[in-house]
Each structure stands twice: as structure tokens, then as C-alpha cells.
Length: 410
Image (cartoon, rainbow, N blue to C red; front, top):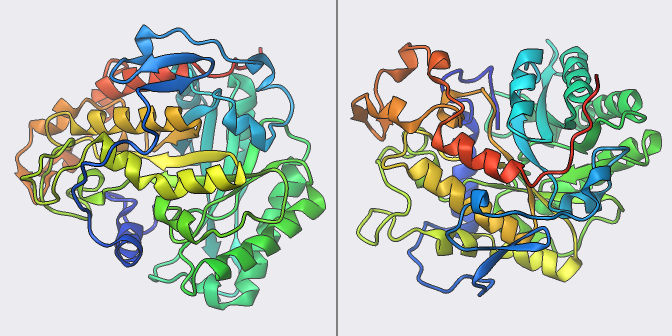
């Protein structure tokens, strides 16, 4: 979750502490596993073609059914299962030039955070959609679809709105305003209700609020996709408490996949360096692609039971993870998403340098490591170190070649 007002250096840190507690409650600690891949297959399915495990998308040429129409008109929930949707997360202050550069990667979707800020009396939320207006214009110009996601800001471990019906109504009012504004806008791919909700009273509490928000949105906009992230925090295990799907059509279910946090958030939440894949002798035990696959089991089971589309709204690994671990983790994660038919957005585009795919890992390796992170890098500007040839941006671009055609406005 992006929390600019809480930490400029580590935007996800405040949330990660809270989510770490939730993960521990849901799943316990990370354990080594040697089980076979839950799918038991030997290859990955992409579009109508097959990519053998270990191969890269550069060695693969895929055909995708009916993708020419994916970016024309409103997307439906089924679009997210059509192997044509891959992109980035971004802040709402992204510039036209940065959006143009993003278009150059081949991405066709950007998930954009809109902060909801408490007023001076903490009695309602305020939202400014003017920056989002610019992103939507850029999306139309460069051929992107835009997902809007609300992020109610708080300095508390449990945000105020969970115990305040007036604040819940305020979130609903903000969604009504956004949906009224964009209901006819085909650049909008969908409305992501709340980023990484952690309902203190559990999934049922969040489903009640989400149902209220969906009903309010659908009264003014019955057509756009609505994206639902289960509690807590859209982690894979959160799907295990989803006993039935929501009683609405055109819903996409979203998972955020950063586990194990000891790898992806080393130096932020955990303070020991560890590689990916990690050997059995590491302090977290053996972690590899099989481990990542098994972590997705609750999501896989939910999809198998209810036949719903899944969108990986966020996934990443800190760029300074040793021995090219960030790229290794991203490569295995994407391979698994593609095998399952999940759409996805990498976190994130030119936001926090620790997630910046354009920064080569070697940039961070020049600094001495203290408590799992390079010391001193944040005092320097990394902007000039970005490269279109970093290992991870090349990896992402290879998969973006499988995306639906973008309709670019002249």
C-alpha cells in the first residue's frame, strides 16, 4: 500500500507492519516445502500457446484470441481472464512524459491510487480527482486502461472508518462522485474498492461494507468492473475465508502477492539479507517457485470452485535483494500468474526506488548492507540511474508483448 504521508522512504512500511501481524495470524511463519507444484504441469499456458518452464517470453510467440477489441469500449470482468491485461501501479501524479515512457514498455493497464484524506474534524474523507483526470486523459492518449483504487489514509494501525459509519458513508460518497464522473469513460478499466483492507472483525465485516459500496456505485454506474480485494490485505490466504463469491455480476477478485515478506521486504520489514531462491540452510528455509505456487493455493481453490477472474493488483520484490533475487522472484511470480490465467500489475512505476524495475540491482549493490538494506543509497538521486535495459524491465516488456493491442489517440 502506498502511504506517502507516513513514510517517503518506505511507502509500504507502515502498512507492512500491520499486515505482517495479519499474515502471522492467518498463515504462521514461512516453512520450507518440497511439495510438487499444485498444478502438477510441465508447461505454462499463455494465450493459445505453450511456454515451457524456464523459457523466457522472448523465445515465445503467442496468439491471443480477440484481443484487438480489448481496449475498445468498456472492459468486462471476463477481460481479465483473456491473457491480454498486464501493466503497472502508479501514483496519481504521474506526468504525461512518464506515462508515455510507460506506454513504450507495452503495458496496457495502470492501477492508480487515489488518497482519501480525513478532514480536520476526522468526520469525513475528502478526495481530489483532478490529478486522476489527468491520468485518465493520458490513458486515452497513450492507449491505457486505468483502474482507480481508493486508499483511505490513516496514522492508526486500524483505520478510523472501520468503527465509524459516517466515514464509511463518506467513502461511499467518494465512490459515487468518481463513478458519476467516469461512468461513460471507456478508459476506466474498473473501480478497486479499497486498497488492501484489513477488517478488524474479519472478512464478514469487510464484505458488508464492500456490498454497501458496490450497491452505491452500481446505482450510478452499472457497467464498469468492480475489483474486490479480500481481507486481510488481499494476501493469498485471505481467499480461504471467502466461502462464496459476492452476489454481484462483473466482479474481479484481486490478490496482492508479496509473500514471503522476508524476501520481498528485506531491509523494510525484515532485517536479514536472504536470496531468492533461498536454500534450506537460510533462516527462512527453502523458498523457491514451488513455495510461491503453494502460497497461491487458496486463490486457486476459490477460482476452481466459483470460476471467477483474478487480477494480481500488486506484486514486487525490493531491488536490493542479493544475487539478482528481485528479478528471480519476479520471473517466477509472473510465470505462475500466467499459468493460472491471472492478469497482473507490477508494483510499481517510478514511485519508491526500492520497487523501480528500471533501476538495475547493481545500483544498490555498490553500497554496504546494514540490516538487510543498502546503507546510504537514499541520500542520492537514483533517477539518473534508470535504464530501459535493466533485467526486470526487460522481463516485464517481454510479457507485455502478449498484451492486447492499445488504441492510441493521435
